[in-house]
Length: 397
Ligand code: PLP
Image 1 (cartoon, rainbow, N blue to C red):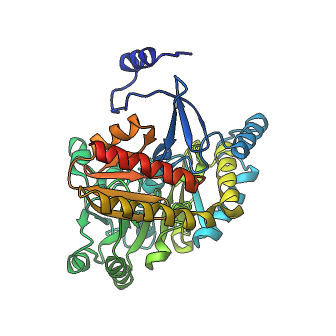
Image 2 (cartoon, rainbow, N blue to C red):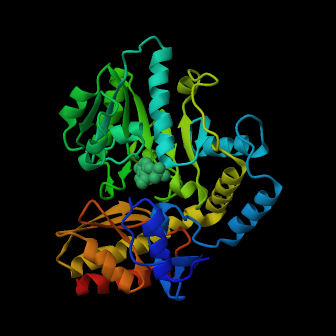
Image 3 (cartoon, rainbow, N blue to C red):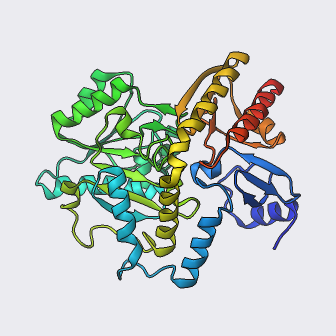
């Protein structure tokens, strides 16, 4: 095993595709809300691997379950039955109100599956001309050709064009534009109930109402991308119901596996009824290891973790509001539960570096926004400590 930062960097720069801009720190282990670098220095993790490590790091119950599962059976493919997929699907059906699950390994794949299932639905219903998608400005849905096609940020899309045709981007603030774009040629509208990568922007309720109304008027399917906002992050399992959205398809990922890659597309019965054997699939999707991890996460949410998020969220947002009052450079604080965005009147990257120097992990998104996605096991004391470090980092910058 390589041990020094220099070795790690040298190997990576020689052999790993240089598509990520990493911060200069090498993490070797984690415990709860802390990560430890190769010198043993502790960092308070307020980003949890971009919203993934919901149970924090080195969670004893998750580690035990994974060790047990790995020594029993990890993977068999979707050629055969195993005991955990149905169990997980039933739990997710109860939590989301959508009765069928398709399992995959990432959020992007969950989105991709939702887009394909929407197209398949119209094709099966004799309306194969209904192929268009409506997405939103500032959206992020992933990097595969389909999910990229509905991702707004032009610099992600342009080098890979032509992408799938027939995608329009609407803005939340313009209800009449929404009504014009969502027509009887639209297969589906895809929306993040809280835009994560786009700067932590919850959908305004008026826009959510307009989306629901336009979908109802035209019969258009609604896809909620809850990859970042779902799986408990906002204090509820999903954020869609809070804003009155009733999706036909939901994409899940990130926090669902607590660090083990798993994604899921949840389908309404009418959509599920149009998918035939062989229409879609993946080798890894819903393997035993991933399902076992997700079951542990759901158990923990039910055992009180979900309920604690509202209390923790109060502490987090009170603290952020106080920060906003102290720093003129903060122009907005947005979010819900344990997803927060602090919007600055300037590029926020120097704050990420200053926070790292102080032992706090956050990230920048959408140029001016510091995003906080702490693990669900964060404590009030962690929140106070993290906000004090953020305060100091902002003051320094
Ligand atoms: N959808 C949303 C809302 C996301 O935030 C992300 C990732 O940030 C994705 C999809 C893609 O997920 P993944 O990176 O797991 O493929």
